[in-house]
Amino acid sequence: MSTQTLTSSAPLAPAAQDLSSLPPHELVPVMARAGRAAQAHLARMTTADKSAALLAAADALRAAQAEILAANALDVAAGEARGLSGAMLDRLRLDDKRLAGIADAVAQVATLPDPVGEVIDATSRPNGMALSRVRVPIGLIGIIYESRPNVTADAAALCLGSGNAALLRGGSEAVHSNRAIHAAMVRGLTSCGVPAEAIQLIPTQDRDAVGAMLTAAGLIDMIVPRGGKSLVARVQADARVPVLAHLDGICHTYVHASADPVMARDIALNAKMRRTGICGAMETLLLDAAFPASQQVVAALLDKGCELRGDARAVALDPRIQPATDADWDTEYLEAILSVAVVDGLEPALAHIAHHSSHHTDAIVTADPAVAEEFLTRVDSAIVMVNASTQFADGGEFGLGAEIGIATGRLHARGPVALEGLTTYKWQVRGTGQTRP
Image (cartoon, rainbow, N blue to C red; front, side):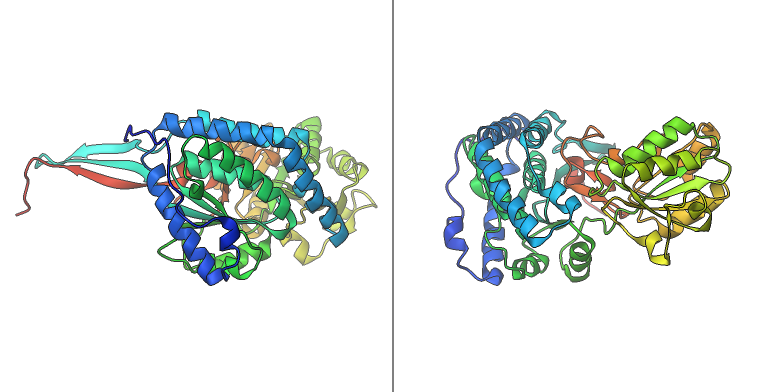
């Protein structure tokens, strides 16, 4: 890749305060064109330049701690007044530790291998032409997200680290937090010569801005939605731009007959109760009928305050378990609610997962290596786990740094999407004068 160093850039668009007066159908194209112009600068930046800019952005987030937490307190207070659920408030709330984690995640991206310029493969033709596939940025990426303010920093860092520009549209629940985080990051990035327009935040909460992004074909190269089912469904239904997304996080954990009882209990508790509002939280627990400690596992969950909804055999395990409805098996609760079923071995467990899984993350707890391998092979999900909590379904935990989302489709990228997932490739052909007969 180029070794040109960027030291400064002129403004590419009017100031955000001027843009906010534009109607969405005018606002989004103006910002998108500015983002595309900034992306041309990013594509020429060296790995060292991008790393320095990301580290400066992380430092700026740390320096703006008081400002960001004050903004977040406004959002949390507004959320409480609006009656947001405990899980939603947990997604929204920042504290010293969480903000430090956000800054650290940005800094970690700076240490990751740069995929841009990587030669995926190379070959030569009989006529002497040399062919290679080389990773390049996708371009301008639009990120539409709801109540999690950390997405502002994660998306900005990953886009910049992979040479892409970002157009961010956060939810109204986190509007003050998003603006404070974005402002801090821009201060850090521009101090290293990165155009401010490389990372833009839509300055209005008008819902029409989402529609304008979804129909900005030719200006926005890819849309990444992060939020609830209704948001993602709308994006997938209305987009005229390629979409990288998952609709639901209906994650299963199957406790096999051979599972260690203590391990099964601990994994089940963590998979559900560590943070109930994240997409990697377990939503269905499948207990093998031959597993001897099912009562202890469900009792531990109930004692932790988790509401259980089960089939007839699960209900028989503990009188506190409520009967499940058909809808429960296809529900992403994002709350301290869990559906539980008792199954007669591996095959029924696989059948249940195949029918109800959203292909996000599914896990098995077992002491039988052959069963573990069968589960890994046959479950068709983006992430399949053995003897581990589904809460590990996270780009940071996979060593990818911050993630822009978890993709559950089968094209382009799957699972946690980080730097490599935000690149495409081009063919480079080197000849010595060949002409085609």
